[in-house]
Length: 400
Image 1 (cartoon, rainbow, N blue to C red):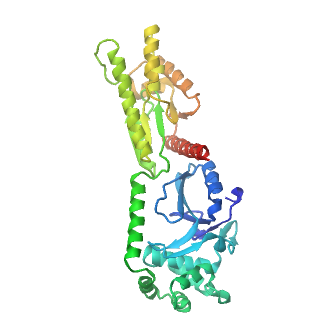
Image 2 (image 1 turned 180 degrees about the vertical axis):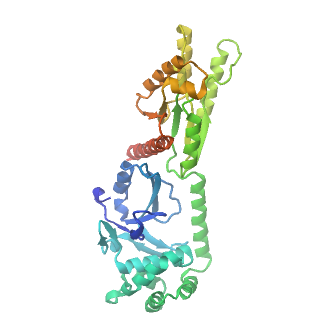
């Protein structure tokens, strides 16, 4: 994010950065959000929906080497409580940030008050993981006689509140006493309840529309019989943090005995219907994995394809638009025959050549399906996630 020219600071959890167990919350200035969003997109992060999040912008990334999902939560202002009763602008807090190795963190005074308010107003209790940082930070909470902008915002919202009493309770580990204080810090009245209910309803609406902002992608898995498309599709669905829908797009599973021309029209209409079904799921923020695709028509083997066969094959191949990402699973014909035994090795090798040619198209990738399945799964997830990140960047550039 330094490369984006942004000022930033980690809100908490700097000791666990090497092995984060949850979200990584980062404070930035609102004016830096566009540059940071672009920088994260270039790094393969995908922005999630953030309706009702009070200045939070979540981004999700995948690290292929460790098979780990990492969630960054960009915070453009510090708000605490369901109705955002404590609200602090980012700029004055970032102006006081300090270095922690290569990491920027909050000033110790701001860190103490921000963590305490997060525990009391956002979480409702002081979890064990917060207790030691709060106890250690109590000594700095009122350094120089000033609580800093976060503590000052708390005092401004609750006139007469003695910050010294709060610091002493934290220093002595009197957590129950502090948790009882949370009730008096939360706003009462109809207005606060309405604000909290509205935010909750907006967040639920965002979740129903799907986690991925702007919709997800459609991915086609191609390869001859025995390449492992269905197995890989199932493994992908179980690994993604966002919903995945698998749609079968096979052209030749059933032999249709219909009058000339009607069979082609029926198959074409069916492919279009399946593609439209995929559009619906993508709009809901779901990654759609097409098991086979219309491109299969281009690699079918015919002894002497005439003009009619070529036209038939062309129309089927273009029955649906190209997917966002085309992944071809590659395996030698002899190995494919050993797995399924449904076609001759020579035929499978010829089909393999056709599929490898498809993998040379823009927006396509070739994945080795004959080696370590774990490496194949990770590579495929990485390809899909980067395709989704690129799609978001294109949408952002088209709007700018």
